[in-house]
Each structure stands twice: as structure tokens, then as C-alpha cells.
Image (cartoon, rainbow, N blue to C red; front, top):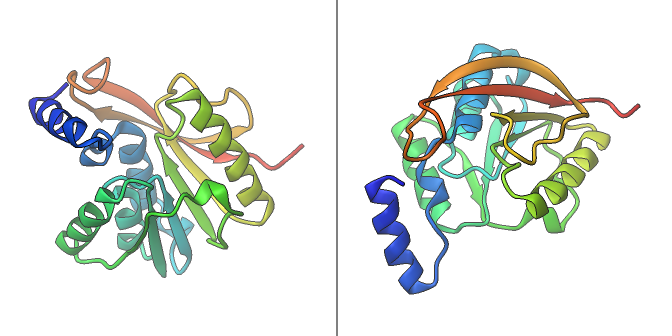
Amino acid sequence: MTPIWRLTEEELGEMGLPPPFWAFAWAGGQGLARWLLDNPSEVAGKRVLDFAAGSGLVGIAAMKAGAASAVCADIDPFCGAAVARNAAANGVTVSFSAADLLDAPPPGAEVICAGDVFYEQPMAGRVLAWLQRARDQGSRVLVGDPLRTYFPKEGFDLLAEYAVPTTRELEDSAVKRTRVWTLSAPA
């Protein structure tokens, strides 16, 4: 782990708070943000939800690509401050929600983006079911993932692949082959 992660995790752990996952631009989010910037027509003029937003990287990229609005949602309340600071630094406005969106029907966003959400088995199953409901309601679902352990092997169409520089302190390699996917239409 990076020294800042280790120190922050130790201090937060003493306070009973979760580790600062939001403090890093994970490979899946980086790939998805790059894809949105390369393909602005996917979000231009649309309402976007950046699910499990962390620091807001994908929502900010959506706004820079011309989205009408972006909501960055993450259950870690510390993300709100990170999202606000990062949005301001990038000259865009996004909103933030700390609600656990998986406990309710998906919102009516035209595009739902999810970067690096398939890293734990229980969460992966809940997220996939929720994203499928969102797709069935008419949302375009975009996922950035470097083939994490619990990424579903079926049901997604590949849109792009990027070599994303990472740090060996966070990942198992210095470069992650990150893919951007869309949730396939039901068979």
C-alpha cells in the first residue's frame, strides 16, 4: 500500500471508519473517464450517474464531455468533499449523493457509469442486478473494469481497451489493461 493509504487507513481504523478507497483513481474509473472524453456523444446533453464515484473522476469527465448533469454517488460520506474539490478544480459542477442506491430502484439517469465495482463477490452480485434493472428501465450502462475477480464473464459488450498506468502499491502490475463495457441487451 502507498504510505498515505497506510497512514490514513490506520488513523481511520482507529476511529472505526472505512479505508479511503475514494482517494485513488482506480484503473476502471480511469479507463471509463478516458472513454467518455473520447466519445462525448455518449453523454452530451444527458443526465449521468457516476455510481460508486469515489473522487468523482467519471462524473467530472462526463461533464467535461458535455453531459447536462452528473450525480456522483458513493456510500462513503468522505467522497462528497473529494468530489466537490475535484469538480471545482476541473471547472465543472456535479452533485453528490451518499445514499446506498442499491437499496432502491435505479434513478432515471440516461447514462449510468460504474468504474471498478466488481472487486468483492457480495457487492458484485448486487451491483450487477441493479445495473440490469437500470438497463431494463432504459438507461445506458457503461462499466470500466480491468477484469477484476468478480467481473461477470458474460452479458457485456466491449467498447474499448486502454493501458492504464497504475502503481504497484495499489495494483498487481504497473499497467492495467482496462476495458470499457456496455451492458448487453437481454437475450
